[in-house]
Length: 141
Image 1 (spheres, rainbow, N blue to C red):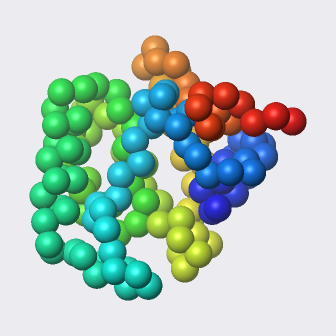
Image 2 (image 1 turned 135 degrees about the vertical axis):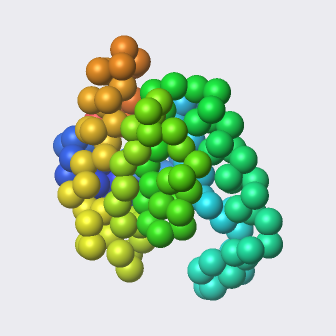
């Protein structure tokens, strides 16, 4: 919800009724947590069991093999991945995690969605249509 609140604040796009983000994925957006599972109601409970190796590898390969990716590092665990990313080839934007516990500490107002699109346009890429959600279609007005 807080991601959509920031998109609305940043770009004026109203919050969708559902949470399916296939439309973003089809445009190349990858949402990746540093740790892919947790025990219910126990944040970071699966830290150190191997997920970090997988996500580190994914980030390293993307950084090495691609150019002009925007990496949005939201929160402490994500920001620990910063050293895996080549600053000369990519844009790195950092903010607190969008969780209800930290969103008011700088996630709200970070404007990462407009900054992402500015960078993509500047590097000759198609900006993300953040309004495009489920199955690549826009939500009806």
